[in-house]
Image 1 (cartoon, one colour):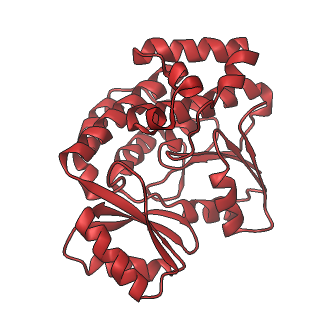
Image 2: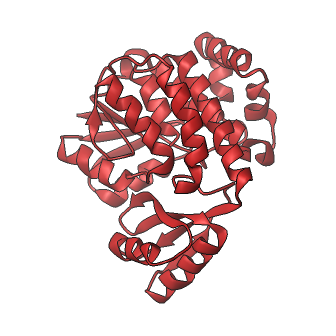
Length: 294
């Protein structure tokens, strides 16, 4: 079975998507439509901006979404997934690519999500850190014993778990996890504590927008971040998407479930090769490729 997977925040780079825009009338049309929907020239920031421009959440998220979704649409009949998944923001790309959401609605939700997250980040200073070389259970237990807000946020691959929370909570967890034997505890350059309780204001704001948006049955099951399980029911998909902002991204579990359900190959669509690498950490033998351009 063929699986297509879609990257999340952090995969962006200056110049992303430019070759698609210049080589395809369809891509150009969709990029220009995106500029109109967003009310600013995201293409200018993607193609000619600075790293700093692209690091703004309100730019990063729609930029990665556009690169991934336009690439999927350009593949035409070659885009024939039997299952899809996306890492955090990438879940929105997967939903549009699998026709559960229209391009316009998907982009609008992604932009609202980015603005709501930015607002939540500004409300309370917070951060994230990658913990390498420890069992998930050790990280979970350590976080649960700290009085401050700190939780597992991204189960990326075996031995790589990102934690998220208040600055003091994350710093204390990093100290304790190094004492517990973590190979590394790396603070991440992010604007805030994504996938933690500190995103609750953003979740409430986004929930209203998601509830008001029409969802269709996707062309194949989508494995969702909130519980790593496959869904085709539009109402269930909506509820999982609402839960996503304050729930951990269960990517390791998602990959294991897709493999158990018969995935034989994974194709990552969009900027970077992060997910391709994470797939290989779950199963070294499985076929995994990444596509940034045609």
